[in-house]
Image (cartoon, rainbow, N blue to C red; front, side):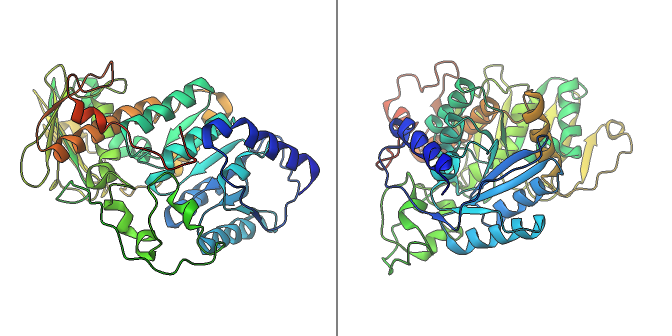
Length: 420
């Protein structure tokens, strides 16, 4: 490494020791080179470059005012595939690859990061990036607990960063149209809103898999992949979709899609600064009724129409329902005004909004605070399911009044040396 880059790395690791402990430095994979980009370009690094990460990274690279200079992942083949994709796009071999995100965050030339690790490490990566002075585009859900997303929102605010959660449906036309109908008063007073979850059940499990031989460090940096989660022996099954329903790594069905659909309900209700105050599982499928202080309800359920991540907003004078297919239905039918929508769920417009906000320093649609509030609703719903009873929530104090069991589930212990 060039001397100036080593100095910045040492300085960064020293300054963030309180945040991340004295975790052993992990080597940079590949040669290090001083990078340069035109002054009008936003220099980007990517943390987490599996399938979803490469997809969003492609959306970044479609923009002429972006220069991607580094990728980071604990899994070697993902790291190398992403580095090759970046180098092919720019026609060079300048992209660096890292295992430890702190190595990449130490670089003074990087303006912004795209975070698409597993859910388990979204909050940690976001907090460290904010403290390192980077703007942040983080995939959803941004946390596994209420305390984590609060830490993200606080770090973003304290360090004056631009943060966009990857809830891209806030920038997709038919979802925006449905939300605008609700917010405009065209549906009357909003009464009941429906948010789709990913699977019929809502619960998570804590299964420990049988040990397998651990791969070479550069193939799978297992300790680093685990990140903040409790230690367990390596098993390759964790690396696939198994982690999505595991309570040490995710919030299961409700957070998988609720981070989009509950978020859209929050937006429709103009509730980006608050949350429901009561949560109760209403059947053995783990559907949850979430009630706001004004009496409006969000039902987290399964079985709506129009593809993945559908929502339905019902008011005193009408309703609207839509989903990823682009299909949309309203009552009365005249509310639709013969509009047609293409459907799909591209991230292009969402990424573009983030880049514009990096330049203007204006806030995007999916701020850290709004994302924290929608994730809080999802986590409270999960807590009601897990406890098997209704829970009350104070959105100002951000606690369950006089409910020790529920309050203990607001956060989780981090594995050393990681802290928020």
